[in-house]
Length: 549
Image (spheres, rainbow, N blue to C red):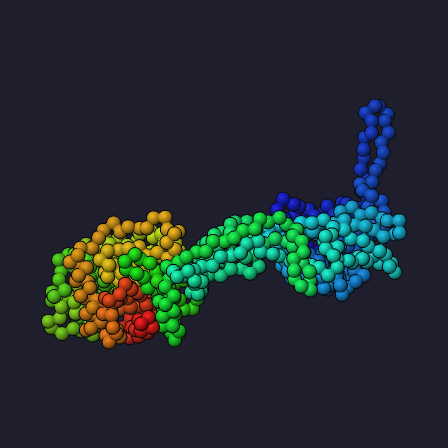
């Protein structure tokens, strides 16, 4: 028999010892007078100890109680005179309440004139959603054929219950919904999250973050009630819980864009994410994840690979380079013994420009251009895109990291989005949005929960922004973003293939980021261990944009 511990009460071993003391033949010595020669009287500790039949009946009850505590309804019912009725009701109660702990404590038994033993007892439970509940009731035991049996009735379980009734839980609040920007219930599962059916508490996503608001406040979410077993109708509330009504959480998600993102990922076999934002205000229009669960769209941490070349290009433009400047693009570039190479070892012909190197995503050009950058150039330029700040978006986000370079090799790798550069798909969508808008607008999902939006400490020069726009458009018309070439809306893009892990050859994440020149939409497509940015992420991005139209 087990005795789960309840806060403030005795532990299992203390409980067992106290029960042995209560029903053992222990005498107490009581001094009745202070005068010399006064007599001493020996009194028994309790009335139960005077009568071995009460002790035997109590011991039998403890077997019944122990089985009940363990949720073994059939075993508990075997100690009663109505096994079928006891098993049915105990099963109903324990199933409905699903307590995480149950403790049944007998009181002092009394022998009645008819030979029965009346035994009061306390039931204490820790019930998910309702918290600790406790009630007092009593059992009657009769000796039949030399064995004590619990006379089972419905009030044995709870004194206020009548035949045909059981115990159950009732929600104290009408839980509100997470809404899209149109005020309709949001169907993006990885954003919304889940609610524990037993406790009524949000356990993930926005349901967890805004649990108190959605559920109508903190505290127990459910009350203990007596219900009619046939109809399920509550007939009496046993715990006083103030009714509450939750308030909805309204997000910026555009259901049309969200559906387009989800449909674009439907045929993808890799783990993947698509994020879309409004460049004007940072509103998150879509955040789709495949599979659900981890919200990699907003909180994932990955090397961005060549999509980070938007930032590197901005740093080079700030240093004085122009998109028309000559650009060498050999197969390899070496930095202190470390070899960097282009995907598939491609090269660019003589006469290639900085814009060509960007559009075709030439790693060796960017690696060899590192001397134009200081140890903090990439970090400082990244700040103009909001990277590395602390974003207050109304949802958990990973806001990126671009540390200052510690070596020449570190700078070379960072220039192509490797080394210690980390970003989420949201960060990369925001980079594209910053180019479209001309300045950084912090992404936001739940506007009325945002206390203070992050402001970038630096701003991109207008000439730099203009050049980046031309280069991202060239990526679509004459570069690695060719999967979008025939789409309307003047898509601008940058592809990325990011190495990770220690395998040889290395595994790669596939990226594509971009924005629509003719509308207020910026986006990022990410395929975890998904291959090539242009060849693999590009077609997914194309499906996404087609689905919106």
